[in-house]
Length: 183
Image (cartoon, rainbow, N blue to C red; front, side, top):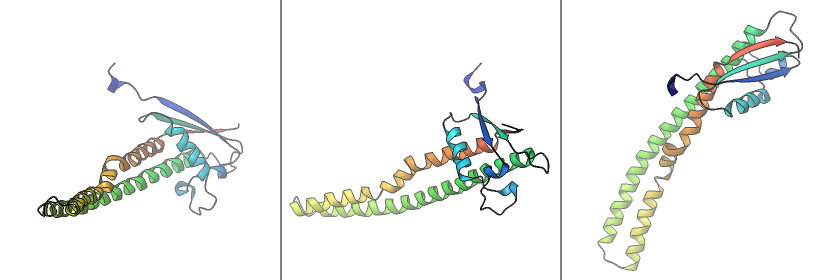
């Protein structure tokens, strides 16, 4: 069996709650399918899932002590959790897109600025090897390259955590969810 055909590992989480309302944000007035998860429940699920390798599959079992009188909440709960993490993935995708757009703009500005600084430093070098012109030339070179710090930070480091979050949210939005009555 090759590495690419190896099935993704499955990780299981058991959540135990007294009632359905414990899983949802009580301040959110929208119907269940669009409701935000309770912040503590969301943080717990995310922290649990983030501890596993990318590409893992998740099975979440919700043990519900007080079963609603109006019927089986399984379908509604599965839809609500999947919708919640799909929404978070989309929101994080938009944040990544904005970050990369900011990076491109910063890179353009930085390249123009570093070019101007290096041209000015080169012009300073024509004044001769005087201490003042040497300091000015070196200062312009340093300032020009420091202007490239932020675009390089964005393209080398800042986008990775967002991409990792998107993958995590996508996997959580596709998690197998089972609702069981009782403890």
